[in-house]
Image 1 (cartoon, rainbow over the protein chains, first blue to last red):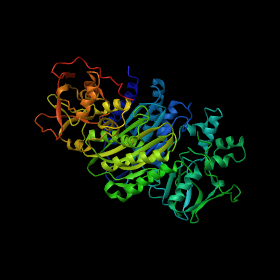
Image 2 (image 1 turned 90 degrees about the vertical axis):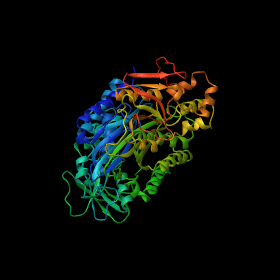
Image 3 (image 1 turned 135 degrees about the vertical axis):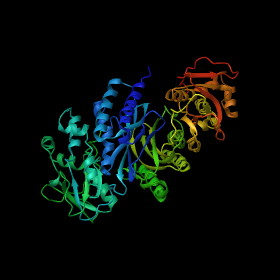
Image 4 (image 1 turned 90 degrees about the horizontal axis):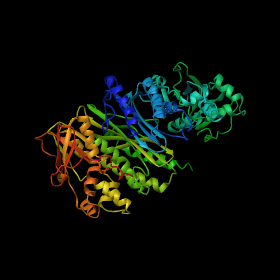
Length: 316
Length: 316
């Protein structure tokens, strides 16, 4: 038996599952032809992104297949969230050393669980034999002219976040130390793209990005694209009992390090014009300034020295 | 210096180049944010496809970077051609062991040369460190309801092709025997997606596919999806002086083998209702029948034994 028949079966499942709902999903033709045929929504613009995950680099080699499936879609959906887009369709390229039925079933389960939750249809893809590598391309839609960008932050805007930065990096550190369960490793393995928040921020946020490389590094992208600077207060960064407990067993600066430089959180970082109400669950963590650069205030309000933004030893 | 800065520069070039023409291309925002923002054409459906090429598997490891760039876009554009779609936007995922400036410049030159020719805009992508692997996602547009599919072939339809099947497989065989120039290796290294033909076939062809796995195998997909069979005549398959010359130095059945089972041609294979005129340069090579299965007539009109469609020793 052709061992990749299994994979085709997976894609076909997506095809049948979504053809039943093809009206709502805009799927005229799903997987199985040379291309998918899709109906865009009148009055909307498309938002497209694509991300590749390599085993051992973007996730630990021993991560469960179900988590890998979830995660490979999640990091892409987070890009749609950062643009304020509504997910519509995705394509998947799966490079596998061998077609292991059990692994594949688990991968699909994780992938499809998030796809159902985010209401995105898998409409096509490619499967090849090679080192374990996953590339997902996502398309979302946004009312014309309403997409969020990195470039709109203005001096005086409030810098905001809704969630606890650093949990994913702490979760990865815990994983590398042997932990396989717990709130932190779960934050690393199963990022939850903030799609509803992103859509709510349309017309409200002046700039938005998702935190994949670390809070400071991704804030840097907003500052660069907007031509502004920012002041960020460590004391205002949300923390959680799990993160605090992890930090208690680490060197003194570990909390600040994972919160500022830890990647993989996939939280939205956004700026709000003064006077606008914060969305529910969001907190202000700083302010946009006209002076370029990032100024970080420590827990006691003291100015911290320039940050080494390139920290990446938390990344696999 | 961050060695991947070079790659970002490449994407930015695409961004600026295409922002100048953003009206025509429908590119509201190109590479550099979390996602690209694109304007679909009213009244059109989207056609999407994605293909991954792995070094040493989908192309020889010593293929020039410029050819790899061209080829990675070409195989995707061929899917759009097979659907009758007009190319619009593409995203590129590039996994590279090292960021070699010279290699990268050549890759980009090949990729962009075909992108300009096909009028498709590179609007985003991802670059990671890993084994040399290229994934390209393409989006095209087609007037609503007019996309070509594999499933519409009916008994009596003429089976047609425009080009010489087998040249790419012969070119790969020549490459593996040491050839680096010549018409056949060029056909393998630089496939020319038949975009104009695909668009011309809208409303005319009852079914269409591009030949990537070999004429017989891809015809098999049309037959399966359409629920029909076909008769194919070896004597009617177009040949070229270059292919004939190559075959003259090969075992007797080599010509039939590369023409029927050789992959990588990226020619359109399509069916026409009886009575319709053949497009220019197209020839009839067989006919659709209601009896299932593929019947191949030899050069003297004799019926050939059942074909081993799984031949794949021409593929790297």
